[in-house]
Length: 352
Ligand code: ASP
Image (cartoon, rainbow, N blue to C red; front, side, top):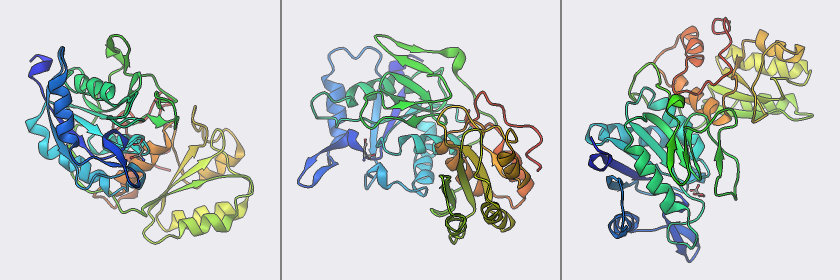
């Protein structure tokens, strides 16, 4: 099938890309879908740009206000339309674009069609807007039969959805994958790096809702972090998991009270994950005595997962229909959607 014959669904969720100035600042445009179709009709030379249908999510959300409960809604909208389209473009605010890319990667793992997330730093109708170029690239990529699964298209690159982060609030190349390479370069020609494309396993479609808003905490270690702060964060009602952002290779301050707070949470069934604060690299549990203590507590290492991927995977994992802790721990190490990178999941820890 030629790219132009492919049908693409464009889901507009909100974000700068579809906003225009209003009395109180930027706000979603009411006629954004019509605006996109007019843009397509006005293009003199469309090349192999595919036809598309636009569905706005109502109400549109500023992605800074996105909550985990939005993710199953987005996933469900896509899977309900799955059989009627060849590819999908999700227009989304940049603030939590990488978080949603990670969550949709987990929820749609095994997806056999491309789901391209994009947004823009500058609104569609503003001077110098990066929005039309992003939509055009995303549409072409969504019609590319070589791609499957969730990816993030922004600036000059296409990134694996489960590996991307927003690294700049200003740059037009605002996203990066600190531990990975782009899947495509958007230069004068659009170059897809075919050998880097991954197929996720096991194949599966979205089924369950993710856990509630308070299900997963993010705790950042800092000099002098009081154990009672950690204890309070881990005592939030409904909490079922926590990502601990540790130092370097996965180290914590030497503080028995801090370890005791973590042990108490673990004993209540809270799933704990150890992720490095360093954007590049990852944790290497057991290298230092301080990370060995976490290992001994059964805290799961996050390898070189991004914070976004660790958080989203925990959310999705905790909503899986199983009460068996060993099954959940083993699933943490499965490579659902390319979230685990070159640092292979440590062997033998799943059963710890
Ligand atoms: N606050 C906006 C959002 O994330 C910013 C953006 O789209 O760049 O929805």
